[in-house]
Amino acid sequence: MDNKKFGTMIDLLLMQKEFIKRHLAPGGVAVDFTMGNGHDTAFLSRTVGESGKVYAFDIQIEAIESTRRTLLAEGCPDNVTLIHDSHENAALYIKEPINAGMFNLGYMPGGDKTKTTMRSSTIKAVRTAIELLAPGGAITVAVYPGHAEGAAEGEELARYFATLDKRNFSCTEVRIINSPSSPYFTLVEKK
Amino acid sequence: MDNKKFGTMIDLLLMQKEFIKRHLAPGGVAVDFTMGNGHDTAFLSRTVGESGKVYAFDIQIEAIESTRRTLLAEGCPDNVTLIHDSHENAALYIKEPINAGMFNLGYMPGGDKTKTTMRSSTIKAVRTAIELLAPGGAITVAVYPGHAEGAAEGEELARYFATLDKRNFSCTEVRIINSPSSPYFTLVEKK
Image (cartoon, rainbow over all chains, first blue to last red):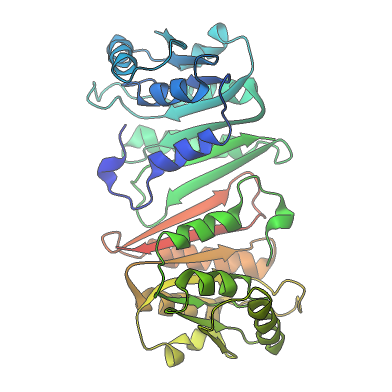
C-alpha cells in the first residue's frame, strides 16, 4: 500500500528506507516479503548491488509481472529472485542469514483490494524473518490500520514484538497518535 | 535525563535533533522547556544563529549556572534568554510565535533526582508550546517511563496529543515496544 496519500508530514516510507540503508551494505542479502509493484524490491536490489542477493515474495502473479517491469525500468542489477508463493513459506526458499527484510502489509497498490495480507500468514512470515536475521540486521513492518484486518494484524504483531528479548532485539514503533487510521511501522534491529 | 545509558540502537536524542533541524532555520525562535545542563539550549542556539532567539526554562538555579557554562564552553551565539521559572509559566515570558520547542522530561542529569518534572506543570507547558507554535513549527517531547511519575506523565501527554486535530497537527510517537521502561518521544508538527 502507498502511504503518500495519507499526507503525513514525516515521510514514513523514506524513514523506513533510511533505516534499512543503515543496516544493509553491498553484498548483503535482503528480502521483500510483500513484493506488490516491486518498489521496495528495486530499492533493496540497488542497495545490495551486483554482489548481493534479494528474495521477493508475492502470492499474486500480477505482482511478479509488475515487479519484473519495475526492475527492468529502473535498471536494477540482476540479483533478484522473484518467488510466486506466500511469504509464510519463506523458510522453504531462504537457507542463509538475511541482513534486511521489508514488510508493507495490506493490499497491493492498484491491485485487488479484496486480497490483503492476513494475520495468520503475516505473523508466521515475520517470525521467519526474525529467525533468519543476521546480527546487525533489520526488518521494517508497515501496518495499515484503516481496515479491520489491518488493525488486528498490527495489534497481533505488536504483542509479538513486545515478547522479543531486548538484549537481542530492539523493536521501535513509529505511530501518528492523533490519526489512528494512518499507517504506522515498526523497525526491528537484531543486536 | 540522558538516554544514552539505555543503549537503544536507534539514537533517540539524535533523531529528535534531526527532526528539529528540519523545522528551524537561522533567525528562528526556539524554546528549551527543560534546560537541565543546557545541551539542547546550546543546540538550539547554534541552529538559530546570531539573528535568532532562544528561551530556556528551569526551576533549579543549578541548571541556569550549568547551562551558562555549557553555552560559554561551546561558544554559542549571544541569543539565549535563561529564565529561572517553571516552564508552565512560559506564556508570561514569550509573546511571539515559536518555530521549535524541546521537552526532555524527568530529572536533571547529575542533579537532584527527587526534583522531576510533574504532570500538572508539564501538561500546562506542553499546551502553551502547542499554542505558541508557528505554522511549520515543531516540538519534541521525550518521556522517561522508568519511574512512576514519568510513566503517568507520558500517558497523560499521549491522551492530550491524541485530541489534536490531524488537519492542524501531526503527532508522531516513537517507542521501543519491547522495552517498556526505555525513554520514548513524540514529535509534533504544526501544519
